[in-house]
Amino acid sequence: MDYKRILAAFCALVMISLPSLGRAEDRSAELLAELQEAETATAAQRLENQLIAEWSKSGSASMDLLLKRGRDALEVKNHKAAIEHFRALTDHAPDFAEGWHGLALAYFGAEKFGPAMDALERVLALNPNHFAALRGVGAINEQVGKPALAYRAFEKVLELRPHDPDVQKAMERLERRAIGITL
Image (cartoon, rainbow, N blue to C red; front, side):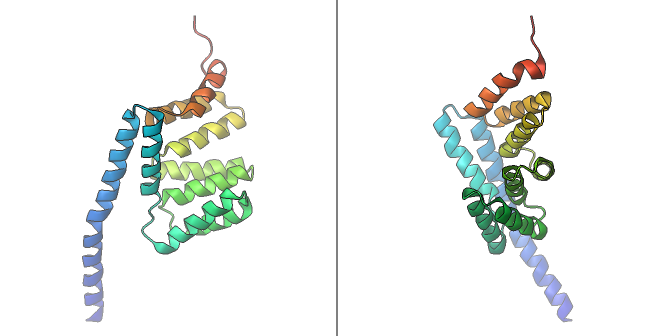
């Protein structure tokens, strides 16, 4: 008897939560569309910050705390601590793309490119429009001598986020090695 009431309460809670999840996804899609159409770098940066804030909402105070601690450790370049926080986060919330992105950044900072690329693949499986993860894929591929793959990742970044001067410079730097010279 109690089991049925618990199950009914759980179902009601899920049904109440679903509309808010849809709104968050709608808001992210809206911001991404606006970012792709941004006319200035300033407008693009504002939209990017809003989009990252949306992506950073895990729905759990505990997971948000792990994300904050991981980001704080990254900020002071304590990659070992960042890896620990982000691994705990991805263990407990494997469907939260920002946890995987933080883990990728921590591994990259520790120059562990293989694990960083694995984490970036998880980010992109969860959020194919994660331009920061695509940027990381480009950076790692450039670092390990795969200019064509780096160039393609950077192209995708500019489709999603056209005002990125660092990516534009990287593409110029990689252009000859990645796509060759056309006459």
